Image (cartoon, rainbow, N blue to C red; front, side, top):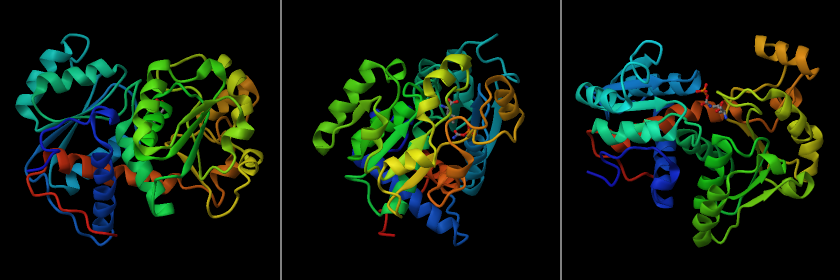
Length: 340
Ligand code: CP
Ligand code: NVA
């Protein structure tokens, strides 16, 4: 009953800018309803598998609560509990799960694995993060930006940090599709791969807004509306020493915010989380002991400042995921989104 019905959500580039816009607006609509205790049961009686090869707080919690609020039953399947990848191939697992579940979320390492699950399961598969992309995060992030600025086109987003990770690449592609000027500010060694940069330029062409890849902090963050960062070492990576040395000058701190020359209500800080902003975790304490730093990608001061919107962004994961699941699998008509 819609252009979304039956489709998987594997990478942003598989959708048109208008379709991404729709999901952002539908997510905002579902959030508005949820805040009035209205929970339309788009997925009544359906079963949703949640496959996780990597750890997760937000994505797991968002998919679980979103599925329940949409009337579905979510089932968590950690890779230590099931045969996936060790005793059983992705293909065989996909065929079995597709015969029992109506939709599948997958978080893991290889993009080819999530693609294969979609190919063989015969049901919609949603990418809950791979080494390549984090598309459900993007719907939540651009919802958050739209809530703060009322629009997307023409805004400047400066991502400062590891330019090669999933979140950086997804922001570059999604921003380029939606007319947001994305600057990836990162040392030369950590620039996104050439094919991703190429794709971003190509996707940006109709919007007349060019993305920029640069190691120049001062130029890169000037007049930014959004400063975004992510962990310096992503799940599955281990090269701490190299990353800390390369990225130390790229920490998001108050000095960096000053460089935007825009420290008004027109500036917000985003982080997909989890964040290393203090030493109050076992992880933080270990890094502090090993490298003598009390914060990595963002200081505690910025994290708790008036610019910070990471909690709003985290909540939006749930509403974004509801929109994605309802649009691709919903057994009710999805609405024409009203103006909010
Ligand atoms: N942002 C995000 O995906 O968080 P989790 O790793 O906790 O799911
Ligand atoms: N780049 C991070 C994002 C976590 C949500 C990682 O992959 O670990």
